[in-house]
Length: 281
Length: 261
Image (spheres, chains in turn yellow, blue):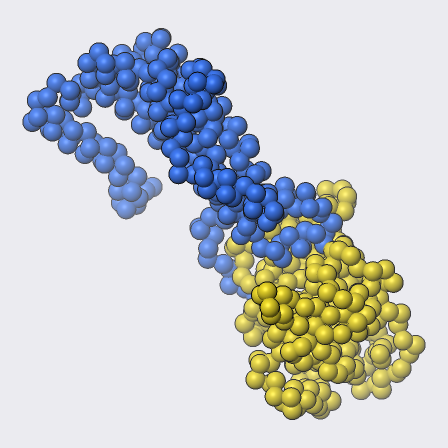
């Protein structure tokens, strides 16, 4: 993939090609079959192979039911593939671990814990001293824009705020890879845009590897270095598209950029051709 | 400062009690039946019972058996219910067993238990234990089953082992449901306590009540009913306060989320 030289890059500067970054996640001929009843089986994923490089922001884009979330769960170690294997830094993934931090559409916060308690949970589990964990967590809460809400319970927060807490909670235990499962899918358009911008700003600071599942073409192009297009029944990779847009990205500038527009239109056309656009929304 | 609506709300239970006693009083005076004393007569008998050392020892013995039966039931039923909720194998094993026990009135088992274990504390506590267990198991099971998978995944990603997830995620997440079961269990404990003492008459609040009935001391009978009822209301009120504190985070007063993205 093409890596943009980090912060210094100016808007119109031509993109330079560098040595490919080392692979962090390798998905090797993964298939997933769900037995829906005694006689019927649903092939959620069929022979998926994909390599994700370190510090890349990769989106998996596809219609509902194409198995994109399942693929993410396999990388997370939450689901075992029927065949094939996923590897993290060369080691087979056999279960969940703190090197891969999930952020779910459903937030999945611990409702009995306050915002601070949720964010501190991971570091405390990792054996970080309470005072240190609290200090780090307060910094993270501020970073996601929730300063002042440390002692609120999840139930008192709006959807967007909950997802901010979920992001901070996952970042708190320093996973090497962020696994984001349609994280903004349950939010209204305005909140969604704000969170996309904030996510990119946060990501720019340390550029963790991100695997981001979405069904929004705009979102995938705006955020990603690479978009993996999937088709359904059975879930397969259609095409992998490198997004050569400079970073840091500013939404207001990007929306006017013909290159951005072309990516969006091209991808939508490709889905249209296979008559899957209807299920994309 | 309390609003007038607040005053009405606060005083409603008191008014209901007074109304009930008034109806009782009038009904009793109208019926003129020896076995139906007036409310005032019954209330007058209460200090006599509570002032009597032997009666107090009996009531405390009842409460002790109830506490043991309830406590052990909760300690056993919560882990069992949680395990059933999270493991299909454990649920498959215990579910049919519980289905068989469920409709059996626990007091109906007393004769057999008395035969084996005598008429003492063990038998009565065991019956209370049986009465309390089922609702607590059921609610723990339902609570554990409803725990969001993704919440457990989030914990697993942080490095929590399956046992840690059960104690540190499933238990707190299911706590509101568990405590609902415990509250039902508490009332059932009181009911089974009195029933057990009615069957194995030896000591306890139930024993006072039925002895008084045998001797035709109807004011004492009704006074004991009031005392037992008040115990139930009191225990339930204490439990409700503890419960509300423990699950403050899930209470509906927090239902209005802040508007901020």
